[in-house]
Amino acid sequence: MTAEHAKGDKPMKMQRAMVGGLFAVLVGVGVAPTAVWADAKADAIETGRLLAILLDAGRATVGANQALINDASKGDKGFTPEVFEKQLTAKFQERSGVNLADLPNAKVPAMTKLMLPPLVEVQKRVVADYQPIINRPGVGFKGFIPATFGTQTTVRYTAKTGHYLKQTAADKILRNPRNKADEFEAAVLAKFADPSYPRTGEKIVSEVVDGGKAVRVMLPLFYGKGCLGCHGEPAGERDITGYKRDGYKEGDNGGAISVKLSLK
Image (cartoon, rainbow, N blue to C red; front, side, top):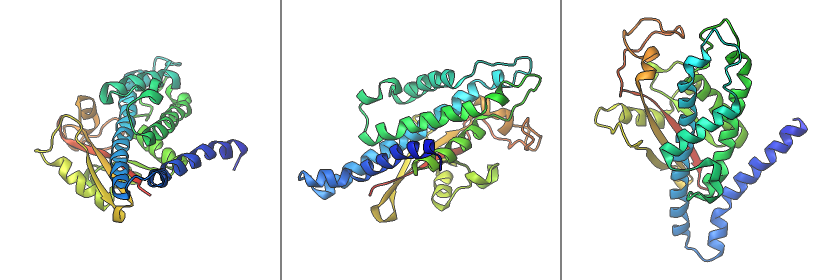
């Protein structure tokens, strides 16, 4: 491990210790354990929801710049990590009401304030690492799509922080084995695929697991018009990525963002 990595890992360990210590602090000042657990559960669910929205806002930002990224006539696209962050901040605030630029004063749980900034930094790092590909002239499709961005981000974020974050999908539309759903995720994905499940309002599913030691949160992803170039009709025809189109329509379920946070 380099000195830089060691230095960067220390804040992550401190964050996990602070989150894990919330119980002890509250119990120590006389708050009943049941109330502490209930508050921790609510905070974890809200944090999981906001983490999921932040990740998807990043995916949406990459998607909104897809034509620019794939413009073979340009070299430097100007889609820098800083430009990405500005657009991400705007999209996230529009969807969540939370201003990342003023997070210390936001009315969100303390653990949220600890966990969102590292996700922003990881997303920016992914965009930074892809600059040579994004800015390559004479090449159209770069392979830097929302799904690729999402997988790169979740793998790095989990490795950096220890917090479980994943984009996932049902087996029939799964394109990356890294994103394969576990048993819990598969069951929730089936609920999201039901036509009666709300397509607006970003209604999450949350559940306490592991005997009350953790909470799981899933945010559904539904196909928009921009997704149908790869996942729409005609089914079976090769899309720009080389995969076969799925034949889905706007509003069909295209997977979910999955989060698991400890309540210990």
